[in-house]
Length: 45
Image 1: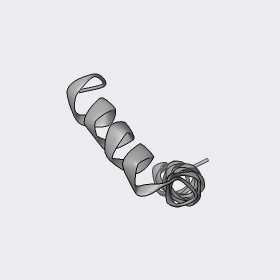
Image 2 (image 1 turned 180 degrees about the vertical axis):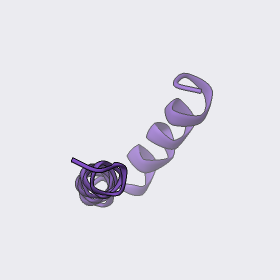
Image 3 (image 1 turned 30 degrees about the horizontal axis):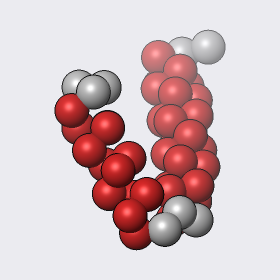
């Protein structure tokens, strides 16, 4: 597998994970979205 193929596979995997997270986040109430935004910025950084 070439470096370009590895980069493409990594990008596709990361994109799929981001889309899954986005769909989950948008299924939450606005209050829960804000709670998770705070957690993502302050606790996972």
